[in-house]
Image 1: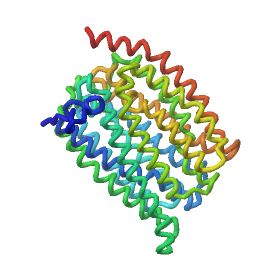
Image 2: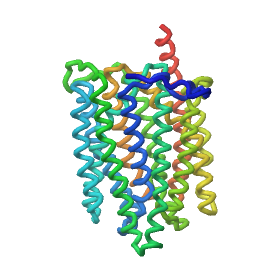
Image 3: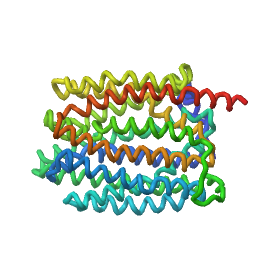
Image 4: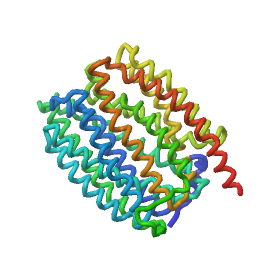
Length: 415
């Protein structure tokens, strides 16, 4: 049930790809492709579609906040149930919530209906907390960086391809006389198909992988890895508040430069390839510098780019800054979850992941609303300044909090 993938012809891929990929892992990665395609399509048009319905930045922040609320409500119960009783039933519940959510998104026009839709989407996403622990359990510890690098690269490249669909709405407007609202709606329908098609593959991955043994504690738990959970929860909170700016990035460039989905899709397509390269190279860099130093350095180097956005005179300059910041910051993407899961006990992974996700969702509830408020009441560039300041805190805190934890991991693995 495994395939060796370390070499293709004369090309040695051992620095980037795990030595062996099991059948459940292949199902997982195939689903990851569909997820990336769906997110690529959805991300490039959803904010522009909602703007055609008459919503402003604070409205968008309020709607997107409901996704975080839904995740906050269900993430911990989903993780605990998955660790105690199995992942399959948790994931099935999420599939149902997600289907209803997308139905409401496609038919909704009011802020009330769309808020309910994003709340349900958050409930569905909360059950996805089983996926990270599942994926980590499919690989040995020494393969973890490469496994998450591969997952990230596949998802990002799929996302890039999906973002090219952003060229379709302007073409439909020019060639067929459709409104932008109708064109965006039709493209969103494509994303829904991708999202729904991923679920059977994820479910196959869950069913064909071994379930963690329950510990018989019901909903009572006493994590041995609680210090790790506290530290990552704090760090993700800082990160997500900073990302209030990028959660409204399509609104930002549309308001400043009148950008539509074709130009936004081109930027996302190019940036995702750059991001995939960083994801693939990160394990090799981390092998030389160490995961904590690589992550902290990458986070710190992104700070100047945050502060450049307000001074960019055109969309071309904004795009260049966006790509450069993403290239540097994306070295962190596979290394953070890999480090996190290496610091956890196997039977605690879903619960611990749920706790850190809850902290993330708490800050995610604040971030879009705060970003929208700052854009409307202070300056459209204010969230970028805030993001730069917070990332300086993020980079220094990451090193100070986790350098000793990483050393403990190396010591325990050597024992």
